[in-house]
Image 1 (cartoon, rainbow, N blue to C red):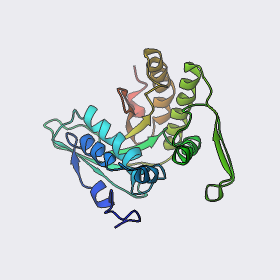
Image 2: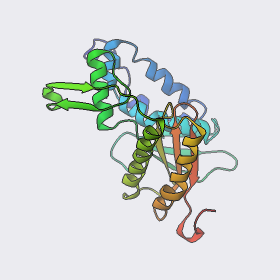
Image 3: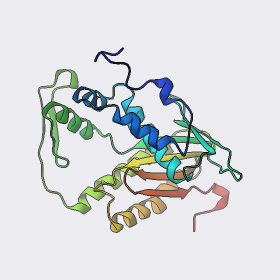
Image 4: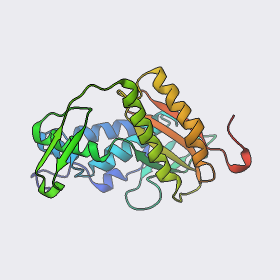
Length: 245
């Protein structure tokens, strides 16, 4: 039993159970729904009970499984917790299997300022979605944390998130991964990438900067996944293949 007097909300064993592309997204959302009390939601925001792994790793992989692999029952994803250089292993038993064998996930959804917002949300029950967030004192001995709600232009919000995507991919581009790995970038498509202009800007960043950045690495696919509708995939050509057309 855990500190809240209930059985574990989520275990590593359950997270790492292989699931088909047909089942994984529904399972993730049902597991997330278990955080159904004020105490458990606060614990999830603090990253307890494998909530971070569920939200920031399993769900982006599940979105890719549902969209890219067509929710196929013949494709199995196994989430792997730990410090290895992948977050998931793909077993593709379709008649014509794809080349993706490993999944690596990164997110733009958990910056330092986001963590401060979640801290304030847990404390006060509400928080401004945008605007500056300031904190005094370290997390274990916090003096104060404040978030000022201010109106911002949509383009400025989008530009901030484009920069976060670029930074997230750049961090991964400098490390070594398994051959045939898909890099999944989880993004917020509720506001920053919610319009056709946003999609065009994201496409421009991906084709002009991110794909060239990943050339020469073991990544063979870049996938940008949002929880609502956004699903963008870009093949990473091998050096001998030349630049994408």
